[in-house]
Image 1 (cartoon, helix red, strand yellow):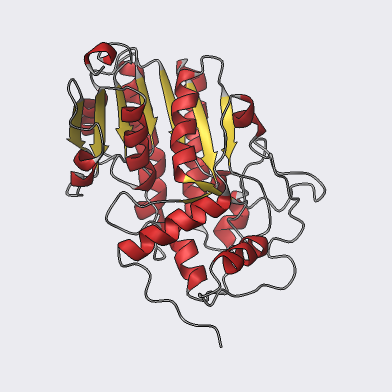
Image 2 (spheres, rainbow, N blue to C red):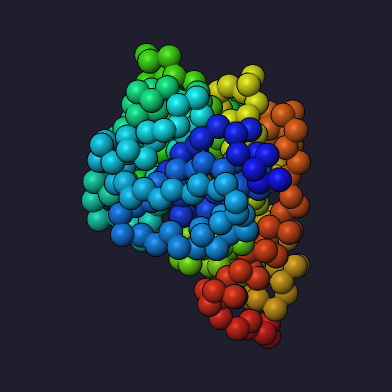
Length: 336
C-alpha cells in the first residue's frame, strides 16, 4: 500500500511541526497518505516524538526535519524548497504560558514577519496553497460586534482594545493574519485560513501547551473566566483534519472558524465539573462572556465541507487522560 501512495499526494511543509497542533497535523497527513513532509521546527527544540508516530517510518515515507527560526528567511526557504505544486501548512506562532517581557519582540514580530517569510518562500517555490493556522484570537475580543449576532468569520479582533489591556497574543495573531491576506492579494498566492478555538486532546508533544493549560487550570480550581479569548473548544484532531480538508478542497477560500459550537466558558466549566466531579472545578455564576450568542453549528463553513466534529466531552476526556499520563495533573482532590 505504501508504494502505491508514494506519488498520489504532493509534497508539503509544516511549520511548528513539533508543537501541539503541528504534531497532530503531521500524524494526520501521514494517515492521509502524504509521504513527503518537510517538518520545520524551532532551532534546538525536540522533534523526536514525531518519529514515534504510526507510519512515520513506513515504506516510502520521507519525513524531513528542518530547523528554522521564522525570522530567518533563508532557513524558512530551505524548509519549503521542494514543495512546488504542493502545500505549506503554516502553524508556527509563538504562544507563551507566561506574560511576555517584550511583547513586540517575543510575540508580534515572529508572528508577523515569520508569516511573511513563509509566504514569500511559498510564492518563490510555486506552492499551490498555503493553509494558515490563525486563531479565534484574530476574531475576538471584538467589543463592537452586534450583541444579538452569532460570531462568524467576518469578525476581527479589536487591536486597540487588546493593546489597552496588554493582551498581546491576540494582537500578534490578528496582525499576522491581516499581513497574510495583504500579501496574498498583492502576490496572487492561494491562502486559506483556519481559526481554531481552544484546542484540546491528547498531547503528542512532551511539553504543556497553552490551550490544554486552560483545562488544566480549570481542573485545579482556577476562577479565570477566559473573558477575552473564549468562543468554545475543539478537539485538536478535528483541527488537523480541517487543515488537510482545506488544503485538498479546491473551492475552499477565505477564513474558517473551527470550533465545536460557541457557548459560555461557564457552560464549559459546568460540563467539565459534571464529567469530572472529583476535581475542584469552579462553578461560575451567570455569563462569563457577556452577550455572547450561543451557536451549535458556528463552524458551518467547515461542516459544509464535510468536517464532523468530535464531541467536546471526548476532547475533555482525551486531554485529562493525557495530562495525567504526562504528569501535568496531580492527584484528584476530593470535594468536601
